[in-house]
Amino acid sequence: MPGIEPLRRLQWMTATVRDVIDETPRVRSLVLDVPEWPGHRAGQHVDVRLTAEDGYQAQRSYSIASASADGTLALTVERIGEGEVSPYLSGEARVGDKFELRGPIGGYFVWTPDLGGPLFLVAGGSGVVPLMAMLRQRAAAKSPAPATLLYSSRSYSDIIYRAELEKLVGQGGGLKVVHTLTRERPAGWDGLARRVDRAMLESVGYPPAEHPRIFVCGPTPLVEAAARNLRDIGHEPHLIKTERFGPTGT
Amino acid sequence: MDSFLDGNAAGSRLRELFALDVTAAEIVCDGCGATAEIGAVRDYGGAMGTVLRCAHCDTVILRLTHSPAGLWLDMRGTRRLFVATVAE
Image (tube, rainbow over all chains, first blue to last red):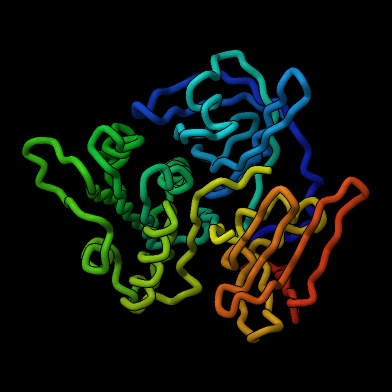
């Protein structure tokens, strides 16, 4: 497992918004220039800190969406009702804006190409973000590890990264993406149309005998049900990594 | 408070104290003896600090409190912490 040398102390760094991408009506990606950014491992997160003119500070954690690169990273942020940070990041931040972040953080929910596969990724809503970082890293490294993403969204228009996922699948290389839509389906939708359940995990994923590395990220109910079902199917618990998303700020 | 996240979410708060990333370290619960990676235990984080609980028996295995004076670490519920220093 990586992360052997003592780490440098976490320092707040200045991020400048280079680009803003509307992913869905409720989700935006921010591409950031962070000159001191040392690169990261897919699945890691950052803390973002906003400071008001009166000195009040709000802090939240966000998964990194991009593959590792020096000096730049991308975050994908969903607008969550009354949050202190996400309304700014998902709605107001403009190109050229600056804010503080620190990271990369975390060594548990990470995938690097040397870990290999098969890779079975299970996402609910914006839980797809750290898993997209893994798929982008996999593509950038031309990793031969087979990978499957099972991605649950409320509706077709809520699917984040839809076009890029199609493109990645089209490039071949052993990537499969399966969508399930839980609330609304476009006319003629012939894909899955229910919540992630045991039968779906069994038919979409790899058999336990192939020892897939499994990453599940999404709302707590999805994560807990999927982790339980994956264990029941016979996947080894230490190969199942989960990340619930929710408010984590101070 | 009933809501919790995975221990992975405590990564930056633990990095305030530990010189290594401990989210991938193994921790043994003193309550039930279960072994888990810190990233997989339950994080009841809040403004007051971090409270990690065993996912099996709910024992509090780590408390990290930030005060204006400094950091308080209480690991009474931890029997052992193992950090790998060689690659997997």
